[in-house]
Length: 229
Ligand code: BV8
Image (cartoon, rainbow, N blue to C red; front, side):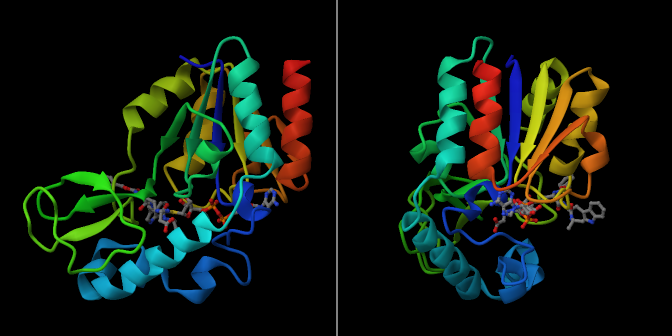
């Protein structure tokens, strides 16, 4: 049970220099989603997909957590009643910013998964289709990332958190991708106060009773300071 449940998206890592998905020069402008973020794309060209995530891993390693990540870690450490961060991001900036109670609903660059036996292990910095699974020793290594058409992780736990939350906040997400985009509606239905902190209104801005627009490195520390009042 957490008093505050926070959904984050690529926008919280934007000021750390990591590309978002839907900006003009964003990740989906450079690569077709179908080619690099679907099981079909992986089957068709595993080397391309490994290269895409090797590039994301290198970018993530070269980035630093920003004031928004650090403010959420402060909130988690100091607020009575608990905070859970549900992130759509696959980078580790929340961890490196000091947060601990994190659910990576779309997986993480830090993990590898065997497409043959479901074994999971810490990912090498660079992976290739030839990498053998440490468990079944077959060359079926893939990133432990949730692609389009795949079930996000820990959904039952997330829906339980949404039902019990007093406050639900979404930070830096465009509200394009489900089921994450439906969380605000779910939380509000269960009586939570819903707040969107984003650069601009998201696709689901009407699901929020409160909105705060601006860069996350300004809006998130301000919001956290008020909550910790
Ligand atoms: C599933 C990992 C079912 C990969 C990702 C038709 C209608 C409704 C749904 C669907 C449909 N057709 C298909 C679907 C389902 C599909 C979906 O929603 N498609 C969309 C495109 C319509 N969803 C799925 O497939 C999901 N699975 O439904 O499974 C199922 C059921 C049973 C059994 C099996 C399966 C799985 C989706 C997960 C895909 N993986 N990520 C990777 O990272 O490479 S998605 C990826 O894009 C992210 O994880 C995130 O979820 C999503 C959106 O990204 P955002 O984080 O929001 O980033 P974006 O760039 O879009 O926005 C950034 C925002 O930040 C902007 O608003 C911007 O203004 C703001 N911003 C920018 N700078 C700043 C800022 N804010 C503050 N400060 C700043 N400085």
